[in-house]
Image (cartoon, rainbow, N blue to C red):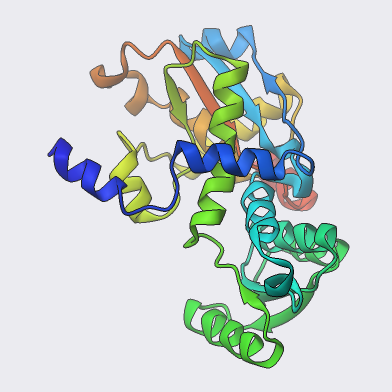
Length: 272
């Protein structure tokens, strides 16, 4: 089983060496985000918790790391006609900002049902929005047409080793800031990566996520988006606390992955 897992890991273009290469590449452009802790949340969870605040990253989310690494990995010739992607969320804004820093166009295919705050971020960072229907087929076909019309380089929102390596730089910073960490909890992403690298998956309910958002706001004094609060919700869940597999996890790093949330939606959630 372990041999099979190692074979699977070998097919990815991202590992610790690629994380270090990405870190050196993006260091001039990213924020080294702070690590917060709270005795109150430690007491509530029964563990020592360390919160990696990627909501303070440029673009308001960890996605800027991957977008920045991908954009600055391109040769001048590759980058000359710009970049294109499809995204309904933080990758759209992240790529827009990374392209702006490099001085190249960013063509962003955005589904019509994308959150308003994330669309506004794309506009704020100079991305050129091309609307699509709210389904993956329309997103991908629209991006393919933009690619054909512009000659830009496609930077997939998640299926790209450069993107994955850039996101992985979070782990380097986190372990540097808190070397005692024995467990990292983060919102999950693509299935193959989760299957091959993650030890366990914890599911949480919407009401648990909202409660975790409230705790982040009231105790840590940070406003996280729902996906950004999932890690705290997981640590506080009964399924985590009562699972004997995690009884020895004493120093836990939690990724607060982003803070791009409509204030109206946030306020409505807190009143529920």
